[in-house]
Length: 370
Ligand SMILES: *Cc1c(COP(=O)(O)O)cnc(C)c1O
Image 1 (cartoon, helix red, strand yellow):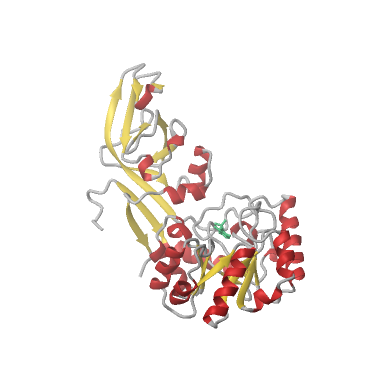
Image 2 (cartoon, helix red, strand yellow):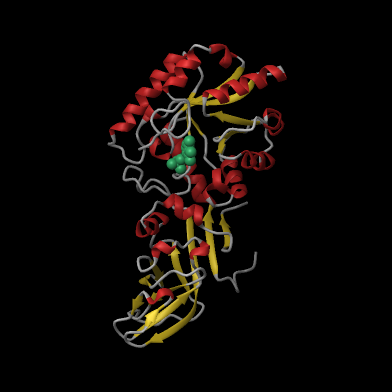
């Protein structure tokens, strides 16, 4: 990493804030409940290695990834046998030996997955660790009601497996008053009872944690809250922001009345204007949907994005700044004045998409790393 002298785009990730957020969530759910971070998709784009290590140092021992390759990468980072790694998409081509080799636990998302893993367990002469995913209303992954019935009539399949958790996932956890939350909770309890499963349960993502203790069971699986995005009212103010992004001003241009800016000439200035061209674009995760809608902060002053976002740069209006900024000054994209959730709102999306879109081009600084 350079000293930043020639850097044009700087992504700062506050590992202390991640650790604090983890601690806050652990306090919220109490000591009897495991906080199992979701570190899928490169820890929501923030970097698997520094995030996972920080969480491990703060006593996280259960982690969720999506792909088997993510699981293998995480295992290499955290060889501790007390670290448990669950793969949300399971292993659809078999691969029980591979999973054993890396000590990865698949989430079984359908009846045929259960059959396959029970078969592999018998073949290998081992009770293989698994998580059983019951669908309670997402209709995305997990055993549906019919499959739960079928499984209850084939209980020998489960006895071949080392069932670590039975889990489900909420569709509307970010909407505390949505009736679907309670419906899913009741369906989950009924399915567990139907299968007569004594195994521990995992139900809540970040939003679910804020729905209260009924939703916590034995393990919670937060991602968003750890990374400081919480577009929901009920979580507001409790989590610390983790991400800041700043880009440098490349040029200041003086534009005449009625001149247009950028691709498609979609915006024409209505007055003689001072325009700063800033080194961030959609290739950096500054979504094109922010064209004409986003804002940056220069020396704490809000400046509107004008015209289209291009691949590598954007233009902002600095006409009304008391002092015209200089080439090389930093403009805040996310930071003290606006969060990832604010940027998401302007783009018509959610903080999750903003974080995971942050590209590889920015120079990364990890604050609070050992
Ligand atoms: C991504 C994911 C999580 C984490 O969700 P957040 O809303 O980021 O807390 C938990 N469970 C499952 C099944 C997921 O896919």
